[in-house]
Image (tube, rainbow, N blue to C red; front, top):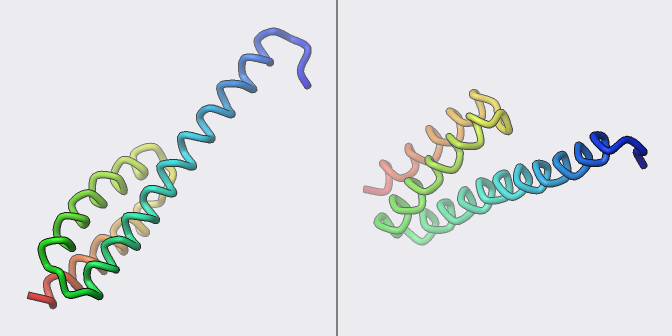
Length: 87
């Protein structure tokens, strides 16, 4: 445990940012699962809607440096192809 006041504050800030980052990564994973569930159910409207939400969340995670660019592009391309094949 740190003794210096600025170090104590840094510990709190790091913990808060870690929680926020974890929530965003979990949100991306849950949106991917939701989109795949809609695709499996052959629900084009639901899949398209959840895919749009996923794009926003995954791009935000990429901007924050939580997910690498190749993974972002791979996930979006894979799901977009599945949605297009449903139509």
